[in-house]
Length: 568
Image (cartoon, rainbow, N blue to C red):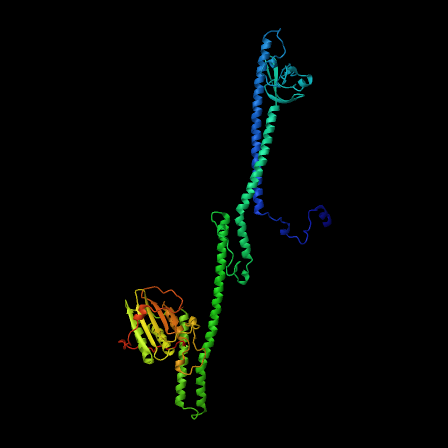
């Protein structure tokens, strides 16, 4: 058999038309608003149908049973009447006398059967008038009934449908029947009533279910609308926007987040998902912003470090060139002295950068018990020796010994940097007050001066690296400022010791505050390190004291690092 013949014998093998996918042939699903009422309606119709059929069959069986019992009772009475007529003798009237008795039901049929099972005589009780005999055709419809008491349903011409039975006793067989019209009318009325009630009930139930389901699904529709609105947000571009400016993504309203309902649970879950999305985007934006700031700081640091290193390197190269040209160009002693000074300056800058790099790595400082009171006193005494044209004052307010755990040399460097900053960027005669306060929880060092203050535009970034009031790279003398790393180093060392540093400045008053945890206390939480001007506290006023005398402790073996930010 050829392939073409096999193809003809299997017409169901057909190629699928091009351009129609499986999804195209799948019917679109109905919405929940239409499916739920339809499902509830079908369920109610099925329940009503089962209930109606059950009532119908139970009531029909009951009515037929009652009719059969009445037919049997009537047959027994007819049989009794016939037996009495037979016992009266051969002169008794052989005709049926039972229908003539008063109180018989309308339509009752009574008759006698011969030995062959044919109806020999039969009478019916009409609605009006005396009982009358049945015609031959009517009697023929009742033939063939066994006289065993069984019940039969026969249709008698002109009279309707009857429930019939026959009984035999002493050779005489009688037949009795009752009409079924009353039972059928009652069953018909029952069916009509059930149908009307079912239709009305189903219509009412369908309307109520439709209204209730739509009302119950309304919160779910609002949740879906919120989800659609969120899906339209430009999340792919990293933008989290809502209907109002700076409002974020749209949220499901509070009334649609009730955990007691399924729709409320979906709304609450959607809000939690939106919160996670917003927090993720916010975290990513913060990370990107921080990365940009870090990259900018690194570029600025490299540029500033290059400029700072270029100046001493250029000076060293210049002096070396002059010396190569001969002794007549410059005195060798002066040239070597300037080369040494520029080399020391470049070495200090490199050491400051290395110190900041080590602090950025998070290396813990050397831990030993240090006395802040003695440390600050030494730093103030050193500052007085370096800048005698300023008024240096020291105040101690100690409720307990000012002991901390940390690197004493680095903490001395912090105080020395602040004092050097005050000496270099305030005019002659400025009063610089340094105080130490000790409580059970923390230790506080304050350095306050009555100089011109820090410019407002410089105050927010005063602790950043290479921050100077004078943006130029040229400094004609030592008082023109340092490299701009002093305050950055002070902030990094303070943070490495679990403390925090802040500044308040206004014309005529600038105060740096260093807070360190006491021994055994946790690290201090970081706060805004730059604040607006504030009124001096009584503690600060008590911190002012006369010019200090040399402390009894020996001078530190390490010269303080006087690199500082250039402030005016």
